[in-house]
Image (cartoon, rainbow over all chains, first blue to last red; front, side, top):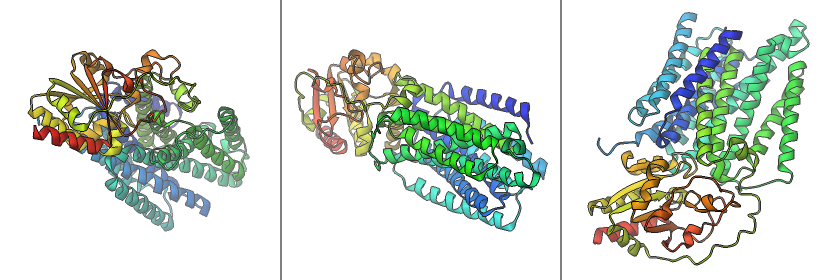
Amino acid sequence: MIEGFTALYIFMLSAVAGYEVISRVPVILHTPLMSGSNFIHGIVVIGAMIVLGHAQTPMEQLIGFIAVLLGAGNAVGGYVVTERMLEMFKSSKS
Amino acid sequence: MATLMQLSYFLAAVLFIVGLKAMSSPRTARKGVMWAGVGMVLATLVTFFDPTIIGFANYLLIIIAIGIGGGLAWVTAKQVQMTEMPQMVALYNGMGGGSAGGIGAVALLEAQRKLVETGDNAIFQQMGADVAVLAVLGGLIGSVAFSGSLIAWAKLDGRMQRNSLMPAQQIVNIVLFAAVVLAGIWVFFSGGVFSIFVFFVLALVLGVFMTVPIGGADMPVVISLFNALTGLAVGFKGYVLGNAALIIAGTLVGAAGMLLTVLMAKAMNRSIANVLFSGFGTHAVAAAEGPEGEMKEMGAEDAAYLMAFSERVVIVPGYGMAVAQAQHKIWEMVQGLQGRGVDVKFAIHPVAGRMPGHMNVLLAEAGVPYDLIFDMEEVNEDFKLTDVVLVIGANDVVNPAAKTDESSPIYGMPILEVEDAENVLVIKRGRGTGFSGVENHLFFGDKTKMVFGDAQKVGSQMAAAIKEL
């Protein structure tokens, strides 16, 4: 379990990492990058798996089920779309 | 097992950061997304061994949900046309937001259920104030991103009218926002299922109302903003669940997405607040006096000859190229020109199309090498030395009103200064105004010749004409 300030440090450092990674990106990659970061937050599926995992009432199970379904869709769809886009980029020299 | 799980999550987080970094350069981008993919698979697999997952039924539900959600997404993502990419990104992003919202709802319901057992009478006592705040906040952001992204998808996919403005839209939105905040506070202090229900319904409605009045030209910024918001919501959910992989990946995307959104808004010379609250292009265009002069037409063949006998040609693609799927024909034509020794470049405005870089993706699909493609800053000086500019289905990004007409809704947006070139050819479907509903004086200019028709058809006529020379 990650508590209080440890989490705050993680938040802060991840935000810096995200900012730094993107700050020098050519416009040509904006769409694939948006799509790629869209894929990365598909990690939400594991959070959904965990809550569905300890759901006990039918209501919790229903919402949890939808959450896992949507999360999986985010991850898989995000990956395939990004991969398809990047597949096409090539240089005239190669 | 616990150590192995933590180690896997750690590795996944590293892979996400390294992957995102690699994705920011065209040479390494493909490797980047693969690394991130490995991280995702790893994290998902070890989560099956999470000791807090209980009950065979729940395992079964998880597997079925992943099967259905993943399967459907796989099929649709494989089939979708490149031109429809923006709405697909919006759709998948909405799913992520919905998932984060759902996690919030279940976590709150669970806390509510435990209230009865422990005898506490408020959710924040049960969860801890910090966790409760982030559960509510993450639920709000995730739900807004969910319903908002779905509206963005519907608009881009042409399933919904583009600018539907309700009366007193802004006041309604402010009231709604206040209501959502109050409902959130209610959830925080109460212990009732009803408060949770009201809160999530209001949050979903807010997402819809926020997005409905936003005009199509602003959609790229909005999608990027929702992408960042979903990331943020995922990060908050990571705290609620005590899962570092979620915190890191979510916050990483939140920060990166926010920066990307700011860059995009800046490229349009607008602030994010302006995009969200102005209802762009919806205010009845202030009795704009029609442009002077007339449009001068030119046939596709003549236009092709004009380019074939020039030295420098710059091509400015816009959404019209995407709609017509013209990129392949255009590239065929360009290869013809190159064969004749014409120097051809592509110039891309940062917000051309419906997503930043949308045009780059389409040109890449057609096989145009990325070193022929230039950003606005790189190419704007070159227009003075250019013989012919060919504008394909672009409108606002070349509209000189952005520089000269203060009353124009796009005033202040940097544009591609195609007017500086000796000749301007414009391929356009019809005589109407573009997506934003603003008249374009460029089309009536002395140097400008209009080639009316579907971009794909015109492109192939041009390619054929050049071949026969």
